[in-house]
Image (cartoon, rainbow, N blue to C red; front, side, top):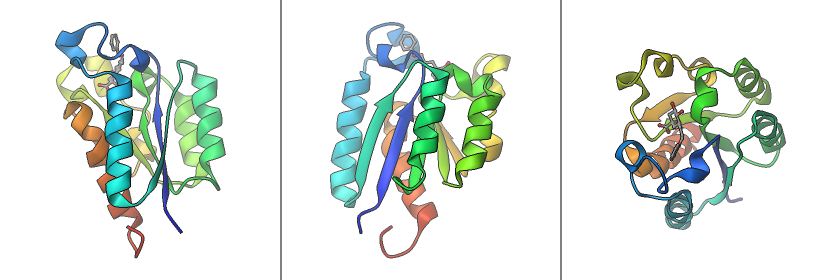
Length: 149
Ligand code: CA2
């Protein structure tokens, strides 16, 4: 059976490519979704790509991922640095979650260097812009291992 990955994007990422191009580049979230779908076809996996500006919706999506997807790639945006609720949700779903960021959060403001996601994620990819998304898909499939990897 084909593996299925959920790619979940948090607050303000819907604005990508439209504001602050000096920080986040000119690639839109739709461009990133297209990149992920193309990569999923090449890898022979299914992918569901979502974005929400609401913490509770992100938590609901994580809960619903259990039994539906084999793993999650999460760019939680600014909730990365604030949300114990997202951390608890990840810890509760028993699914591998790869933490993803477009920017290198460790090279930015001190408040961005704290991640509540990192301790409950299987790993983190940051600083590679949109290219981080296919990299995270490869990493998650490698982590899952087995014949379907
Ligand atoms: O680097 C990342 O991917 C971040 O998750 C992006 C978040 C930021 O709060 C994290 O610290 C790192 C911000 C996403 C906001 O994206 C915008 C895009 C265009 C215009 C304004 C915000």
